Image (cartoon, rainbow, N blue to C red; front, side):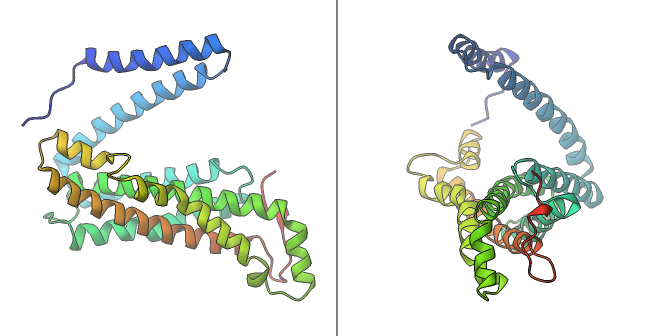
Length: 264
């Protein structure tokens, strides 16, 4: 079975549903029409641009081009991690923590999967490497962003409790144990929900795409299981690294809580 080729009319019908939603929001006075319209247009332009770029990269299929795209993707993801936090860590440290956590997990997990789990020749074949990195990076970015946001927000709200524990002689690690645990849990909640709902409440995107493209359902299921394990591992390890680095940044060399390092 060949995948049905969508026409501009098909896409216009789908866009019409979003437009109808925007009209209803205006009538209800929700004030979200502008955001919905701008983000929808942005999504279309971004995806069209990505499509053009990927066609050129797929034709070239050289490692330097794929590495360049990976660097750009991780750089933008690092920015999004900081942008989604209410009280992000100031300066380059906030960006660097998110970027380092993602680079140390999403990239490593992707390379391991391409090298030892997916039968691609060469291992950096762009049809496999770029979509796989994108799926893992997107989910890891969300988990790290949530974990760091919980870390900084809770540290700000619980500053008196943390300082009291330090005064009582607790180490930084002891004083922030609950904070770090809760932040890790916050970063993993979307992944845990994804794992719990897969196949019962929802059919994941990659599996659905492969089935629509004509792949046997069992083969699509195997690939989806692989992807979800990779996402869970990358998100979990990434959140762990980000929380540890972020928690350390909240204190100086004399173990004093430094909330002045947070954006207000």
